[in-house]
Amino acid sequence: MSEDKKDRLRWLAQRQKYIGSSDITRLLGTAPSSWGGAYRVWSDKTADITKDDIVERFYWGHRLEPIIAEEYELETGQRVEPFNKHYVVPWPASGYAHVAATPDYFASDPATADTAWHPRERVLVECKTVHQFMAGDWGASGSNADGNVPAYYAQQVRWQLGCIGSVEPAVICALIGGVEWRQYYVEPDQRWFDESAAFADEWYAYHVLGDNPPVPDQRSDIILGTPPTAGNVLVADDDVAELIAKRVMAGHLANERDETVKRIDAALCAYMGDTFDSIRIRDESKPA
Image (cartoon, rainbow, N blue to C red):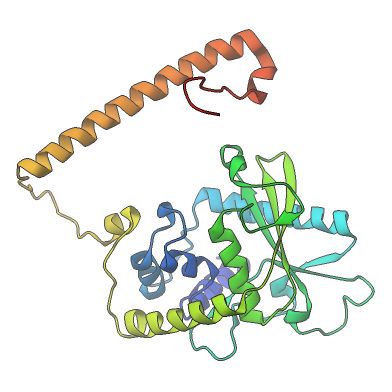
């Protein structure tokens, strides 16, 4: 195993001791359901760390972070460096036992970049890769993050700001669809952080240290927390059978709809060429 992989495994083991910025969005229920909820956080904190289970979409996001950060450096003239180059990670929040964060990068004036600063005196830079189909969730570049980026990303950065005690805004840099770079500003919210950190500390002490797994609530949590049936046959009553039938029918309709859309798109693309990617189709039956 390479030293880089060993270092990452050590970092993953350290993360188990804290509630981090991604964890808090799952505990608060603002993260996408695919990220899981409280049960997934508990599982992550109590599982044995023997390998890095990073999925492919996150893998490429990590690989692209330096490029996104470099663009901020070019745009602003600031020196941008990885947070873990100068500071311990995860960075523990003062006054809390199990609250910490691992910011991506920080930016500073090149003239004073080599000075030994406390991280709260740096500008945190968070890097995100955004699929083109999610571009509509991101507002104009240069705007405040509130209402212009998904709420869970803004919460992640506010968690980081709270952990290091920063009073200065942070920056989210996003690469949209692999072709457009945008930036957003995130203001600290000390009240929100204090309330969330107190909740996270209590949650960690009860569920992780006390070995009390929370009830799975998100679909991904339910799948993760459901014991294997080993081929057992479950007998459904009439209500459950009706739900299963509706789910099967909905799946068939969704598949049929998707195939129909694909065929129509193919025909439109053959007619319109490259301009097809830039059009927006308005349904005249719906109010504008």
